[in-house]
Image (cartoon, rainbow, N blue to C red):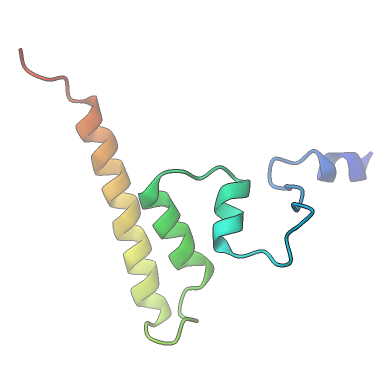
Length: 83
């Protein structure tokens, strides 16, 4: 029964048959992450501080900025246009 729970988890996705490796872009596609702000934040978080030119704190800060922009855009979209 425990194996079934793991297999059916919303956090587990099948690896496409032709995939030779899994990169951030494959993960985003597998989890149907389509918003560019969220994509950018996830990319920053998955490799925070390990890309050679920015430290972890800077990557985390940039991910937070992307997520804040996502929230701002959601709020902007909720404002009804004035007639």
